[in-house]
Image (cartoon, rainbow, N blue to C red; front, side):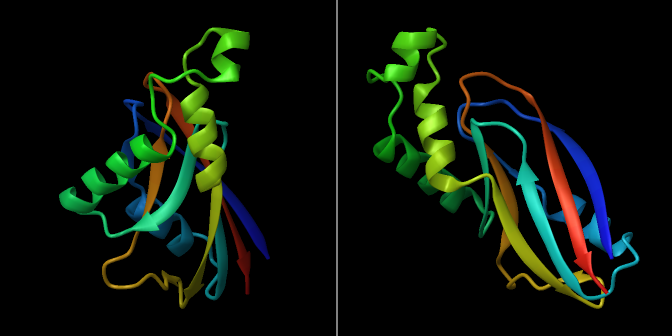
Length: 138
């Protein structure tokens, strides 16, 4: 069986990191699928999805790391072509990836004790983001 749900979130951009674990867990529990996998996919080319320990220190560390890997304020060919100033956001998104897969058992996500699912919006402005959840299993 396959069940698809969509959730929406409003972000602030600029490496905004949102814990979406409760929304994903709620969708999985409501899916009538007991055991399987959920794919968590963010539509868009300037955001990504991963898992972290969602606590203020690590959130700050992750934001700082992205600034070192693909910094704002340096020239990007994308910006030269389109003039939108978010070339760094596209690079960050492509490095992180737009989806993850999380197994679930008896309707519950199998995340570790300190592991949460997060959406990171790298864009240079806030956005309404759509996250597609696709549960498959039995």
